[in-house]
Amino acid sequence: MKYRKFPRADVEVSEVGFGTWTLATGWWGEKTDDEAVAMLRRAYDDFGITFFDAADSYGNGRSERQLATAFKGRRDKVVIGTKVGYDIYDEAAASARRGQMELPQRTDPAYLRLAVDRCLQRLGTDYIDVLQLHNVKMSHVQDRAVWQTLRDLKREGKIRAWGAAFGPAIGWLYEATDLIEREPDIDTIQMIWNIIEQHPGTAMIEAAMAHSPSCCFNIRVTHASGMLEGKYTENTEFAPTDHRRHRPRSWLVNGVKKVATLDFLQQRMTLGQAALKWLLAEPRVVTTLPNVYDDEQLREFAAVSELPELTAAEMERIEELHAKNFGVDEEPMSYKGEMMRDGGPYNRIYPPNARVASAASATAAGHSTARA
Image (cartoon, rainbow, N blue to C red; front, top):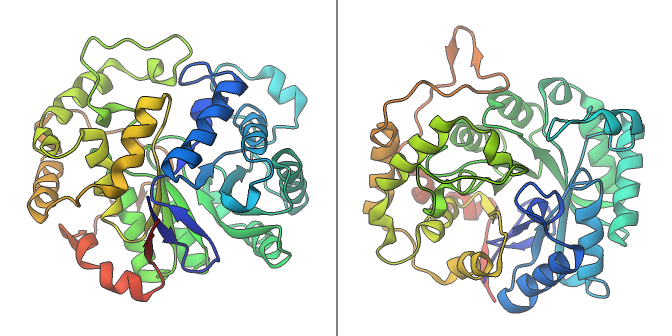
């Protein structure tokens, strides 16, 4: 396993991390706590994964409790990230929640401090390595008190790095770019980014290049909700509780067609591994958070660090395919968040392979890797 450092914080993480929502929410299949704890321990003991990403809303604290159990007595060996911002303590809202609908968000300083203290209790620790505001909206971006509270928590030693996570679906462009411009000392951003869903993630990286050279990225939805694992067909069916069941059928049909154009990536590795190598070609990406739901996937994804990099020709081919929407004619994607401004989209061009060419400048800004 290789490791990368946060430029503005004393935090080093494995290139391949572990997002715990697959273990704690039931939205990717049911796992018992014992199964979850065993898998978390295998990720560290057998594969050198050190970064584990949770949220207080994942199972209403369940993911954090699982991490506390898994790494009791070894807290200093792992890097724990969690997220706050949903009011999981509002009993009326929780009881009225249906399915996977969002809970009310709350981000006033007093609540953020309460939420962080509760996270610390569940995690059984006195510090959080990476704290991110969960699914940031524009009202949060524009509230200086939110980000000052995170700075204060870092200064007090309760957290080591702070940032924002954008979601829950593709979008939130200007929320991210405005935050980077307004709070250029932000440590990290968690965003959705992958080979077939490059917008608006690429624009977020552009914004960091222009306004916050020390801002690094941790990536979720690395495989487009499993599409880039290369195992779906047009006849794939998802369990009733699986969040992918709620996607329109066109998402599945068109996604399978797009993935079919990426066969050339499977000469030296699996498509799932190539999807992670594509992300890690960007030096501002400190870690990737693939959805892991069984030991086979854990083994497959953890091996990525030791695999050869994608070639320049492969990177160029991906960019060419993306420019043509992978040969699929479909309706424009419906985005959430603020995606348009001043009468037009955010449309600066990110040159093919600029991510690879920028490695030297990113290293100079403080990004580095190390091999275990």
